[in-house]
Image (cartoon, rainbow, N blue to C red):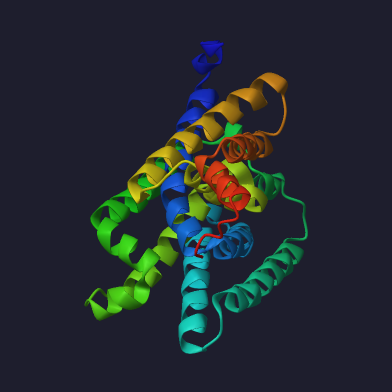
Length: 281
């Protein structure tokens, strides 16, 4: 089974998948608990514009996507804070605008680009040494930042108003969290693609939530689910000769449904309903 690891391209793919499984799981916990799922989807689609700019200017699409998605994330945050509109409305505006911008840029290229197709749907087996180093660098930045601001990010996730009253720079941390989500989205593009990347951020954390009663446990379980999804999906895609990004996401989805089926939280809810007890929500 492990003879495929003798191939250099498979070694790079496995390392990239493992890195992304960990980072997406860690950031995904904050995304799920704070209700930022739509933001992550919006930023994923916004990356299309950044990748298109990279192809137009002849620079690394990942670098252009980093700048573009960070600006989009800050724009969403600024619009919701300063413009007095809800975050989902701001996401909807930037979602449409950035996708339209990407389509416009692609029209200027006047040629079909197979590499662009790889960014849309993922191409983990085509990960180069440069891609791996770039993913590793961004992963270190994201994980180190989470480690340094673990308590503060936890505080604003559950009670941003109280955090601000307590003297925590809630607004700055809000923008920091948006930035971390943006970086996580971009570093995952090569593995699962623009269309599917938000699922890899959301699903492992949502799966871990089914069995967790503390934040630290949820993060630990999410990392395990993320690693199983990315590495397991990669092996399945190789042996069955099917799309790697889609297989990784479907593996994560299957784990979610299994977790939901046997979730202690689901059983407790059924018991409350059967006893005609309505939990406080």
